[in-house]
Image (cartoon, rainbow, N blue to C red; front, top):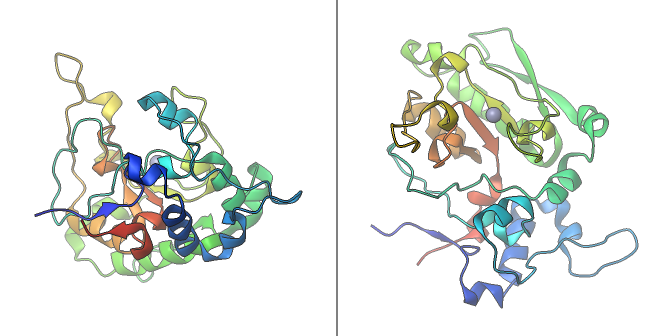
Length: 252
Ligand SMILES: [Zn+2]
């Protein structure tokens, strides 16, 4: 079965038609639509949707345009399988866009934090998430549904390993999605991470213990899962509605 393709999935054709990308992001983040207009003014320098450059893998991560962040389509699947070699859908982030959406520095992001009741009825915990662009509301919806899962799932979700943390990704100079309070890590006792899991040749050996039932609830509300990445990080869920917005997905 062919999977839906994202309009941004590389290719010459898309390089010449940036407007579908703009429409995709405007639909995914309607409150930021004005920032995505092609008109540049003093107050709105405009975001580069497509810089027209052909990039290496490391360049895609280090200086993406907005279109590059959609480089790999996100595979919505009903099962969990080792991610294809090289594919990290949702792991490329445009920091300028994230700063514009969620706050340009630690102080501003902190001001956007709102409470999310974690697993209402099961827990009294309150965690904090970015209140802008539907991120905290989406996490609250996830939380409400996770709380209804049968008891055997509780071990994965009762504890969490953090949301907001103004920090850089280990081994890089790139800010983490946690810096913007749009990512949550589940209980580290059940997680698997590519840096910890290599075979004798040094290749990443995919392993996962997070049940698909949990993954599906997050994906339903616009979160990508680190378990779908070649550089897998199975406790990590990140609010990226553009990967699930109909305007961003075209049928092949
Ligand atoms: Zn994380």
